[in-house]
Length: 304
Image 1 (cartoon, rainbow, N blue to C red):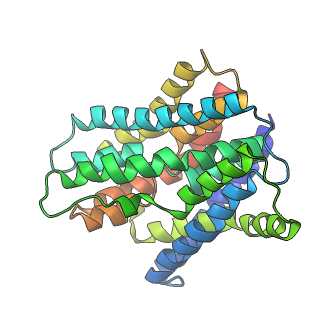
Image 2 (image 1 turned 90 degrees about the vertical axis):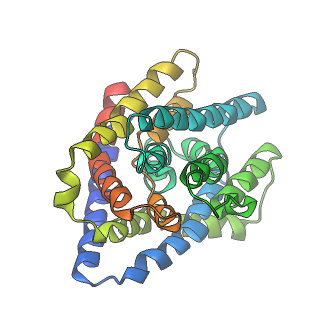
Image 3 (image 1 turned 180 degrees about the vertical axis):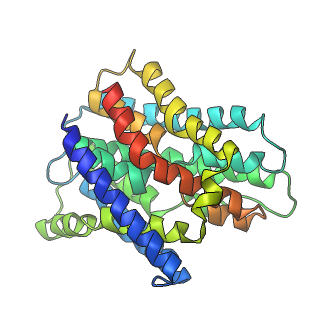
């Protein structure tokens, strides 16, 4: 495994993230940029990357291995919520529901997908793509229920569970299972568009975090403890739990990357929507995102 390529990529990710952050702090990128660019990223670029993962150099997976991988990723997603719910029991009542989401809702597509793409290529991208299915279902069911159970007048809608990455992941599964061959013009489209996923995602993350003061996030001891759980202890636990029965190294690495990703930026707008303090979630997202630029490559090098 060529970790030198990963180090170079993480350096590039960090530079792009800093550019987005500084541009937002200086006012070169408006507050609406992150929102508009996030829509483009999620609905066009990321969905194209997921579909592109089963086109061209298709993952060579027997149906048995495919379904094993799918149910493993479902179990992994559920495990993240189990760990998060347990940790939140030791938190204050007013922030415990947010803590569950912050520890369980990881930034798989914005950060994890580019990382596995560098290390393992289309098969790993495919795994992260199909992980969108349990991710969206659990986030918009149990995750939102945690935020709403203490508040009246809020409810979870089935329509909220449907997202373009989820649809793309299901479409990719169909294409893969039934060996569907799409026209060359279509495959070229997805290949070309997906190339913009990495640079745009890093710029969007940086711009999204532009409203957060670094000093406040880095001086909060509670956030450091939660970051240790999110970025180090959880992925290490997942690695030692799975390596006993997962023989596919690509699947194992993909699962560990998912568990080692920083918190998803979606947690802040959801916190605002349901009446929670966005400062808490924004600072934690900032801290885990910055730290992951170092912890991800170090952790993967140590474990693999």
